Amino acid sequence: MKTKSLAFLLMILFLGAAHAHTSYLQKVSSSAAGINLRLQSPNLQIETQTLQGEQFQRLYLDGASSSAETGAPDLPLYSATVILPPTGSYSLQVVHKNQKVYQNIQPYPVQSKEDESDYLPQRYADFSQSAQVAAAPISVMRDFRVLQLSISPLGWDSNRGELVHCTDMEIEIRFNNDPGPNEVPAYQSYSPAFREIYEANLINFNDYRDLNTALDGGRILLIHWNNTNSTFQSLLNNFITWKRQKGHEVFAVSSQVAGSSNTAIKNYIQNRYDNLDTRPDFIILVGDVSSIPTWIENISGYSGVGDYPYTYLAGNDNLGDAMIGRISVDTVEHMAVMMSKTYRYERDMLL
Figure 1 (cartoon, rainbow, N blue to C red):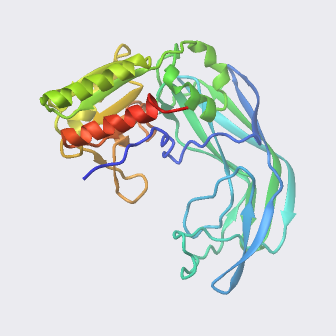
Figure 2 (figure 1 turned 120 degrees about the horizontal axis):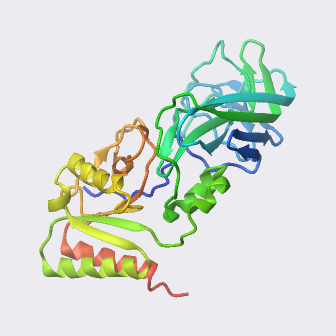
């Protein structure tokens, strides 16, 4: 069985996690004491839709995502991820400045199927939620300790059928010295390979940008299946040389050294991650799951196979701390085909 290559952003797979912040949400100010955010919500779009003979209202806010709990009213929300100090905790205060009220609203219920024509909505009696900001547990995103926020500018009361749209919200996060989870050493640098990810997902990354001005390509840990065939070794060495030519530092090791089980391989990766001199930015697995085993993920509820758990390397959370991909090959012939495709995409593409 072959697995599909996994890209890191899924880090944000994760988690629900970490959506890139929208232009409607801005950092107002930040300092060593805290950070102030402001969400100026766009106009609410309402579309009436019939489901199983009942009328509901689809609610749309530009740039927002949908809530995920099946059967609950679908109230769009925004997400933001904030870098916290390496130690301590925080307090959160939200000010609702302006709001609009809509009557006789029945938000469309979240469905678990793409085809909803034969799916009865799960009811949501006695639902009551104000416009609010919810914070996930403090996590670690490789180099930084982070706080993920879900910002819901819509509130709804099922008994009154009343929808409240908070069009202007101010969010104040104050840092304090109370003990907090997932504390890390003081920030001194960050991986340049993650700069674009941080720029897209950490709303106050500019406050930390100057910790590292290097533009190097990052460090690759390549774990390959143990194959002594000379053709395979030649293909592998050429691939490693190409990555080095692109500016990456590459360390390659066979599964005979890294381990034959997923836990052994994870421990091997963890040991290299814990050493700043060997910490990988990228992990490349070369081999099918019969030679380099994968994991059964439990985040989505589908219990599918995947390599993302190999990247849980910092913090007690489900945020990946390295980028990972797999070249899923189990014969020398497959390896030759994959290398040919890789060079075609990365090196020999005609302009």
